[in-house]
Amino acid sequence: MSGSLLLAIESSCDDTSVALMSGLRDVCSWKISSQVALHSQFGGVVPEYAGRLHLNAVLPLLDQLFHDAGVSCPQDQIGAVAVTSGPGLIGSLLVGVMTAKALAQSWSVPLIGVNHLEGHLFAPLIEHKSLDFPYLGVIVSGGHSEIILAQRPGSYQRLAKTRDDAAGEAFDKVAKILGMGYPGGPYVEKCAANGNPKAYDFPRPSFEQSLDMSFSGLKTAVLNAVNKAKMKDQPLNPADLCASFQTAVADCLFDRVSRAVQQTGITQVALSGGVAANSFLRRRLGESDRWTLLAPSKAFCTDNAVMIGAAGWVAWSAGVFDDLTLTPNPNRELRHL
Ligand code: KG4
Ligand code: ZN
Image (tube, rainbow, N blue to C red):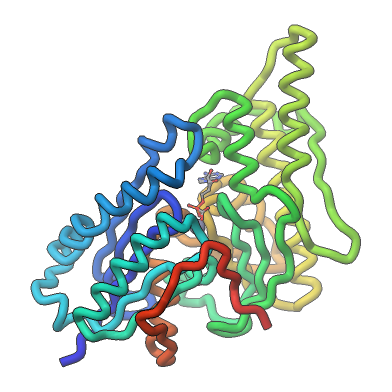
C-alpha cells in the first residue's frame, strides 16, 4: 500500500522543521525547533553546534509531528519524503538528508531533495491560492537576496542577486553594531518603529544594466555613522539609525522589483525569506499599483519545512525523484533556464 502523505524535513541552517502535507497547500501538521537560544550567545550561527542540535531534535520532532497529525502507521500513510539538500551548512544539511534517506529506504517510498531556495520560492503559494506561475520571486533571507523569474516549477531564471551581503545579513550586522541580539532583523525592525527614516542619508547603490543588489556598503555606512558619533562624543539615536537603514534596504528592493516588473511584464510578486517577515518592507513593496505583492504569513517567511513540502509535493506529482545516493550540496544552485 502506498501512502498519500508527504513528509518534509528542513535542517539547512539553525531551525529543525518537519511537516506532513496532503497537498501543495494542505498542511496536516508541522513543527519547528529553533536553536536561537544557543546561537544568540555567540552573536550568530555556530555551524558545529547547529549540526549537533539538529541531531538531537529531529527524531523527537518527528514523533511529535506524527502524534499531532494522528499518524499511527507512518510506513503505510506516507508516500514520499522531501528534504532540503542545499544550499546551507553541510553539518546541518547532513542530518536532514540522512534522516530522510533512512526513512525513505525503510518505507520504500520516493526521496526528493529540495533546493532550499525553491522552498522559499514556493512559500507564498501555500496561502495565496491566486498566485500562479509565472511570477517574480523575491527571496530576501540571511544568505540570499535574489529576484527569480519563476516560469513554472523547476524552471527558474535569476534576474538579480546580491553582489556582497544578503539583506538579512545586513540586518544582522547592523544589529550587532548596535549591540542588539541575534538574529538582528526583528530587533532592528522594532527599534526602527520610533525612528526618523530621513535622519541619515544612507547609500542605495545600483549597477548599470543589472538588477543586482549590494548591502555591504550600507552596513559600513551605519558603522561609520556610529563611529563618527562616538568620536565626536555625540549622542546616538539607534531608532533613527535603524529606520534610515531599513528604509534604504526597502528602497533598494522596491527599485529592483519595479525594474523587474517593467522588464518582464510580470506583475505577480511573491516575497519570501526571513526578511520578508519585516512589516515595513511588506508595506513598502505593497504600495505600488503596478504589481500585486503576495507574501507568506511570517512563520512561512523564515525557514520551515512546509515550504520544502510544497516544493516537494510538486516534484512528487511530476514524478521527479532522487535516489538514495542523494548528497547534500552546501552550494546548490537553483536550476536556471
Ligand atoms: O530565511 P531565513 O530564516 O534563513 C535563511 O535562509 O537565511 O532568514 C533569516 C534572516 C536573518 O538574517 C534575520 O535577521 C532576518 O531573516 N529576519 C528579518 C526579520 N525577521 C527575520 N529581517 C528583517 N526584519 C525582520 N522582521
Ligand atoms: Zn532560508
